[in-house]
Length: 260
Ligand SMILES: [Zn+2]
Image 1 (tube, protein in one colour):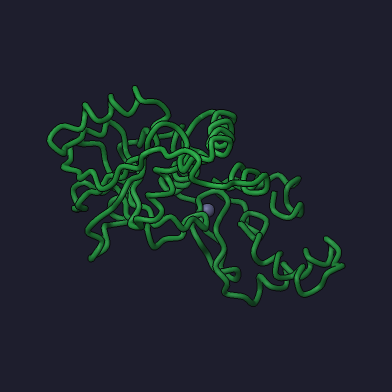
Image 2 (cartoon, protein in one colour):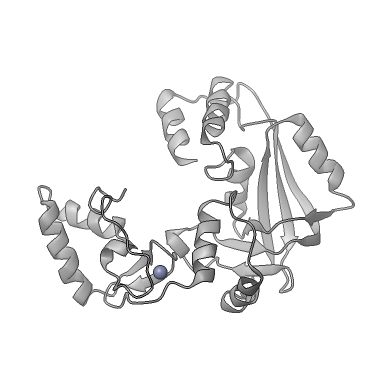
């Protein structure tokens, strides 16, 4: 997974085991080592990593709870609520049930930052029917969110979510790949039928957690997670499907299948 070096190591998840750099996302550090010494052996990298951990204050993201810790101070007990949050942001499909006791903990830990007033949510609709059903339930600019939902402070990220079915937002990754392939074949600007962007005014009572500045698991999506509820929302943008507008090549397709 990370440059092959720690992929076959059983990662300790127990509370009382000492953390080592193998329990963290060290991708960037190892990249740097390989860049400075091209033919370096795995053993030498391991030695360097051990040495670095005594000296460096570089922040690494824990592979279990996603929280960031300096290399020379990695010992911590991964907290249950952080593990849940990390799993949720990695795969927003599977795990939306928040345990009651996590709610207040997360709210307290990651309160809404001052100045974070507007958040956006990009949604890509696969079919006309999905789109129609959603628009019908968007009554007088208010919408009922039955589960917790992820929003972003960045309009450009929301556009990305509205344009393309994203990795981790559908259970079946094959469908995502088929949709992206179809988009390229049609030289279309979006996957599916239509994309929309919602905007919402953020208030403390709506927000479960504002993790836009946390860098949990090295994520950079400037995410704010909202509690279920009925909220006023604004339909900020509708992205219609346009055909024959783009000129994708095979390399673009391959990259998009990997990255989007
Ligand atoms: Zn941890």
